[in-house]
Image 1 (tube, rainbow, N blue to C red):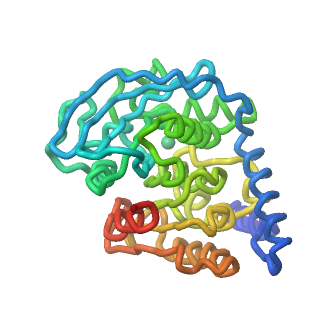
Image 2: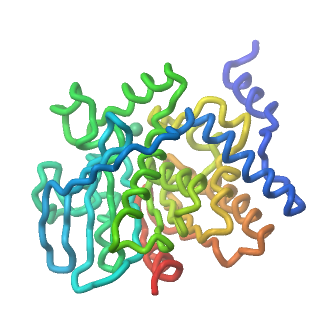
Length: 341
Ligand SMILES: [Zn+2]
């Protein structure tokens, strides 16, 4: 008797992804890169062509010892707004390098800017995301931390009174899948709009915009950077792997699934679109949902693409003793190195 396990394994092994990186010449490379970007955008459900007015407004302001904290809202689409925190260093002037900080599963952007779900200051353990937005502002970066669609203030009405850590991933994802769209695509588009917003400010240097994200935010960070060359450096934490060894083999939130993508490319090919821009891959060697062996395999495959482009110095790894969490041992230095003065 044939088992379902064997059948699924066979289905995967039969696939020859169209954009598996096997490029020898530069003209081939451009075709690979442009073709994969176009295909990837289609698999994500395509992005809106129109970019309606951002209509930005500030809804809250606070001051801390090292930085100012603002809650801003800007519009992504005609009927969709993005609330975000801005962290701006004190005693600075002119155009600053900026980082878009993408939180993972939890209670949204508050969780990475040192706040509790009710908005009070969190003086306790910051959890697996280690308040990385605050670490970045302390290094002199202008930081923006949007709520990703389905989390925090961007949950559906039916979920708003649930525990802060609950999200709307399932309902939004499945709804969109029926329309041929994906929540990954919408979240990526929201980050593109966040960059539109950064570009509209006169205190941000458009040539020095980076992105850092963990877990589900690592997906959003990695794939937005792959598709949007306005991002000049990235740190992907707790996400890099192959689809087959993580998303397809270990239980993961439905927000990770992109219909048909494996027929086109595996995760290392997609993240390889970031090359030759600086990329740091951060992963805990005991991460139970993104096993380290697959992360190392993915890293080697991405690095091949950097090597092909003569950019080995633009990619690095921080495989640290830890689990599914931020390390930061190299991440903040990495951003300073590539985006600092
Ligand atoms: Zn989710």
